[in-house]
Image 1 (cartoon, rainbow, N blue to C red):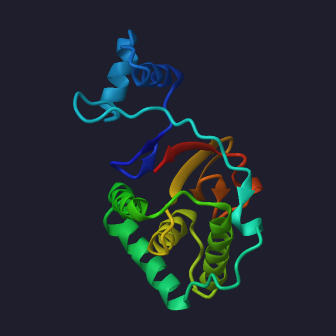
Image 2 (cartoon, rainbow, N blue to C red):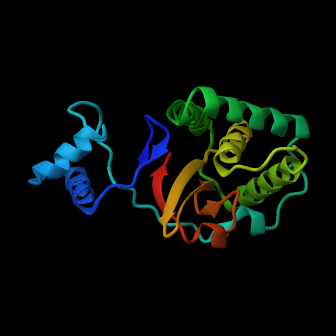
Length: 202
């Protein structure tokens, strides 16, 4: 599970998992030891809002594999500024506050933006592919979370609302992050995300 308050992934035992699943379903668990362990780790409190389980079907199309519009161009300076802003935000503000800010920006987009029709898929593909090309010019390693936050901001300013997906796999443990818009994966290919299970869609 992802602990947003500490920006850490946590692997919990089977009994603790069963207790969390029961709580998410609105059932009070009877395993006092599991509840105590969750409380001791700071994963369970007596206040705050409840969080449900993530049920998310992975899209079967990728913007990186679609034909794109040739007029969909992101200037290099905009990509550089977005990457730097995302990097500083994640480092000094933390994931929770960065996601909250992204959600507020998406809400403003939702007021004026319709659902993504097929014509917009070509524009999204073009903007995403332009981001990938410009990103290669920046002399720092590509990091899925940082680049997803940066691309999300750029797409929001272009009028597109997106979802940020954080997912994991267990054997061996790995975490991954990407953006989606409706039924479209944006900054990865379908095979690149197929082995991961989403734990957060924001």
